[in-house]
Each structure stands twice: as C-alpha cells, then as structure tokens.
Image (tube, rainbow, N blue to C red; front, side):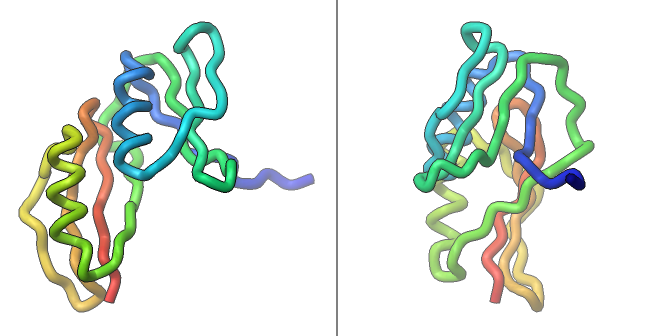
Length: 117
C-alpha cells in the first residue's frame, strides 16, 4: 500500500488551547486524546480526522493551512477568527482568484483565509 494523506499535525506547547482554537475556528470536535493531553485529534462532523495537536516545540513558518469560505462571508469570517485569537499577519487583499488574508493561530502557526472567486 502506498502512503496517503492522514491529517495535518501541529506541534504546540499547549494542545488543549490550540485544539480549542481550531475546534471553534473550523467547527471541528475532539475524537482522540492520548496521554492526558499530549496528543489530540480533531475531526469534522462526518468523523474525518483533520488536525492533530501534539505537545512539542513549535517551528513557525514551515507549514500553513488554507482555510476557505464563501466570498460573501469573508469579512465576517475574518472578524470571527480574529475574535477567537487569530493574529493578522498582513492586510487582507483582493486578488484575481478572490480574497485572501494571512493569519496565525494563537501559537503562531500560519494559515490563510481564502474566499475563491
């Protein structure tokens, strides 16, 4: 069997706080927890594993997620993510393919909010 994509894993010193952020940001829920809180997995409403949080040192900038929303929801989603603790890394911009803003989660992991045209 060849390798296949399973989930994105983010290293963090505080798995519980980061799991809380990504659960609220993307509507995910916890489906797995090991060693008290060393490892937490978040899944979507269909049970598909999406994000793993593993206690460990972080290295900001090596990976980022693209989070998508409808074009008409872009400004509201940006406000919601900022209220949850996201950090704006740049000014939102309009590109030929749609709207985008570069953000970071509370641990500094980079992600983009994208609204494709």
